Image 1 (cartoon, rainbow, N blue to C red):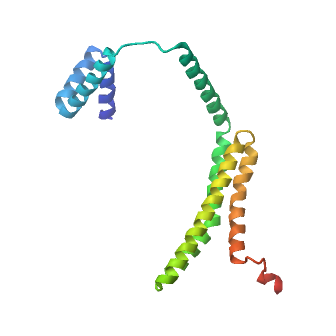
Image 2: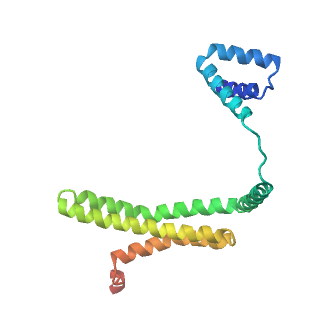
Image 3: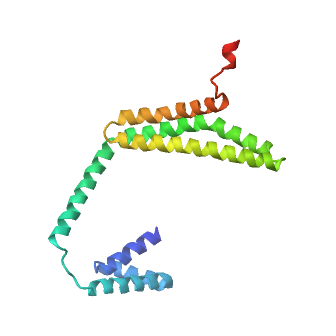
Length: 189
C-alpha cells in the first residue's frame, strides 16, 4: 500500500498537483527512502526532457486515421463484450473436454515411454512416435480453435459447437490409431 501511495505522490508531484500536506508527506517519504528519491529524480528528468521537446501538431490525415482505427477497435471490443460470457463458457467447456479426451492419450504415451527406457533404440522409436502423435493432436486443436475464432464473431453458437467437437475428433483419432483397419473386437463376439 505504501508503494502505491508513494507512486501516486510521485505522479502528483510531477503533475504539480500536490497539496501542501501531501507535499510534506512526499518529502518525508523521499527522505526516508533514498531509492525512491533517486527514482523520482529520474522521473523528473524524463518529465523535463519531454516538456522541452518541440510540440508539433500531427497532420490532420493522421489524426483522422487514428480516430477511425480507434473507433473500429472500440466497436470490436463492444462486440467481444457482448459475446464474452458465451466465449468464456465455450473456452472453459472446450478445455475441460479436451483435457478429458487427451488425458488417457498422454498417460498411455508416458507409460510407453517409461517402459521403453531399458532399450535405447526402442525408446528412440517410441519417442518419435509419441512426439508425432502429440504434434498431430496439437495441430488438430489449433486448426479447430482457429476456425472457431473465425466463426465466433458471426455465429457464436457454431463456434461453441466446433469447440465441443474437438474432444470427439481427438477420440476418433485415438480409435483410428488403435484400430486403423476399423475392425472392432467387440463386434466379433
